[in-house]
Structures are given as C-alpha cells and as structure tokens.
Image 1 (spheres, rainbow, N blue to C red):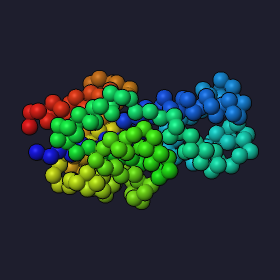
Image 2: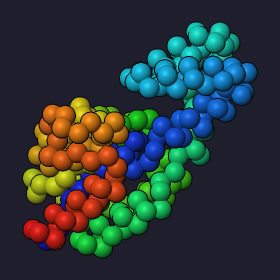
Image 3: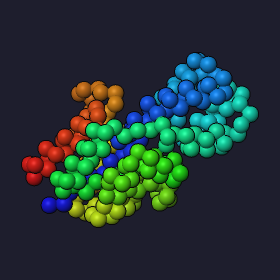
Image 4: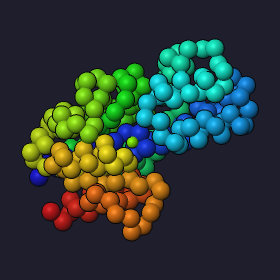
Length: 219
Ligand SMILES: [Mg+2]
C-alpha cells in the first residue's frame, strides 16, 4: 500500500537555528558588530519576526547600516543555503521510508532562491519524491492548496490520506489537519504534557520517522 508523508524543511529536516547562528557570526564579523551584535541578531531571530524583510529592516536600523534592507536580505538568501545541513541519519531515514513504500515529499514556505538552493545543496531535492515551495507556487502553508501540490508531486492525492511532519503549529500542524493529514509536531522546546492539536509530538525528526515506520508496520 502506498503511503504519503510530507515534511516541512526549515527546523524540521534541517536545523535552521544552527545555520542562523553561523550566519550571525559571519554577519557580525563583516559589519563589526561584536559579540553583543551576534546576541542581538539571535534574539531578534528567536523573537520570531514573521518576515525576513522586517527582520533586516530592524537590523539595519539597530546597527545603523547603510546597506538597504533588501540587499542585506538578498545576501542572506545567497549565504544561508551554504550553511544549512541535513544530518546523514535524516537522509538515511528518508531513504528507508521510501524503501518501505512511503512517498516522501517536502512542503516549505519561503522564497524560491533560498528554499531551492537549500533543497539542492543539502541533497534533499534528490532524496524525496517531490516538493512544493510556496514562493514558486504563489500559495503558502497552511493553505491546503500547497499540500495538494506537494501530494501530487509525490504521485498521490490528499484524498488518499497521509501524514504531515513539521515544527510550526499554524503552518504545519493546523495546515496538515485541514489537508486531512495526520500530524506530527516537532516541538523543539519539549514541553511534556502541553496540549497541542497534533496527533503526536516529538522533539526530533528522527523520532517522527521511527513513528511512521511503526505505523507502517501496523497498518
Ligand atoms: Mg519549519
């Protein structure tokens, strides 16, 4: 039996925070912002600014940089794909899911240049059956339309059911539920016992992959 699983990219298959910390070090060095500058960038990132355009507007203002925010953001998008990594065990985990009959897809919100370069440089683009990038499709998670596109790229339809694995409750879990999928929330903060709308909550994507194998062997 064919089964579908869609994974979010940032913070799910790749550790975006680790790559961001590397980027912050480089950026602070380049603009001579010092250690406090690095801390400020990381804090600003942790505060979850919804859009990088806004993030770089704040950065530019805070550090009185002369480079336009749009140029800072463009440089960030060129650099980040070189800093992100997908762990070898995650790549193996995805291959094993596919070998066990799962159709594996990636569904991600972001700009085409940044997200495509991340998918290609990590090898993830070749490691899955299909992917959907919001910036390329003109539609974002949690919109069901992007889930449908990702499913189709994997040769499946949402109506056949499946799973969504991701670290953002609104985009991944709520979006996945609305798309009729079962959901696994990657909760990086690990707050046991906390109420959440996902079918399962785990702290790392490897646990999600193990869970899918277990489900696959039962059904
Ligand atoms: Mg994410």
